[in-house]
Length: 396
Image (cartoon, rainbow, N blue to C red):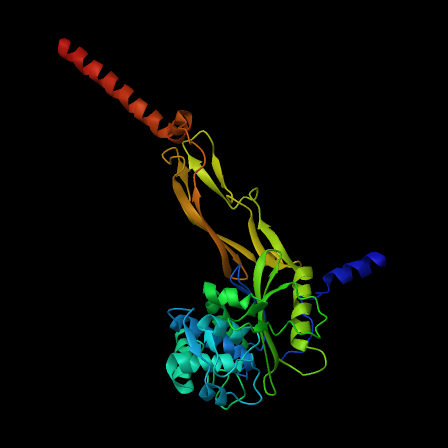
C-alpha cells in the first residue's frame, strides 16, 4: 500500500517555486547587474511617476557635459536664490559668494541642493526653461521614452515624471562619466567657501550601516514618496538599485529597503558556474585521422550571476561551425563559435580553435575506399592480362 501511495505522489506535478523578492515599501523598483548587463528584478518599473530629487541625476550630468572648466567660478546671485522654492532641499549657498562649477555639482548630488541646481541652470543656459530643454533633449537621446522634465529640482509639477526603468537608463549613462561617478560615490565634500556638504544618506540621526552603499542619490516629495538610487557591490558584481514611492515614516524606508535588498542579493545570488572546462559541448567526427572524434569544450568556466536556485534547464548552448574535421584542419585554426544563453539571453560567446594536430591515418583512407581499390586493382590486373594476351597473339 505504501508503494502505491509513493507512486501516486511521484505522479503529482508539484510547481517549481522561483526566487521571490521580499515585499517591501516601494511602489516601483528595478535592480540591475552592471557587470553582466542583466535586469535581476523588475517591479512596475515602467510606470510613470514623480521622481523627486532623482531628477538631479539628469540635472548634474547635463551640467557636466556642458561645462568646459570645472574650476571656473560663478557668483550665487539674489536672482538665482529667488528661483529656489521654499520647500526645496538646499545645500546652503550664500548670496554674493563665489563657487566653482565643481562645487555646484557636488552640492547638487550630495545634499540634493536645489540652490546648486538652479545656479547651474542659470549660469549655463541663462534660464531654467532653456536648461530643462537640454535635459529633455538628453532624455530623448537616451530613449527615455516615458520621461519628461519641467524643472531642475524634481519638485512635484504637472508634466514632470519618469519611471524607475528610465532612471536606470539615465544612471547607467551618467556613471560612464568619470566626473559624475566620482561625485556620486562621494559621501562628503568641502566647497571652496568652507561649506561642508554631505550625502543625504549620511543623516545625523541615521543608525544604519551604510558601508555597502558605494554611491547614491535619494529623493522625496509627497507624490514621489521616498526614493533612492544606489550603486552597490555583491559577490564582485556592481549592481544598481532604484526604488520609488516608499511611504514617509519615522523610518527612512528608501534606505531600509535598499539595505534589505542588498542582504537579499548577498544571500540568494552568486557567481554560478554554469559550464566548466570539462563539459563537452559537441563531438565532431574526424575523417582519415589518427583519432575518430574531437570534443569541443569551453576554454574557461562560464560564470553568471544567478539565483542559487537557478535551473540548468534554462541554459542553452548553440554551436555554429564545422560539422566534420579531417587531417587537413590545422592546429590553432578556427573551427566554429559557441554561444551560451540563460533564459534566451546571450551571456557569453567564444570562438573555438582546434587544439590538436590531426595526423593522417593511411589505413583509414584505405579502409574507406577498400571496395573501390579492390575494383581498381582488379581492373588493372585484367588490363595487364589482356595486354599480355594481345602481345602473345601478335608475336605468333
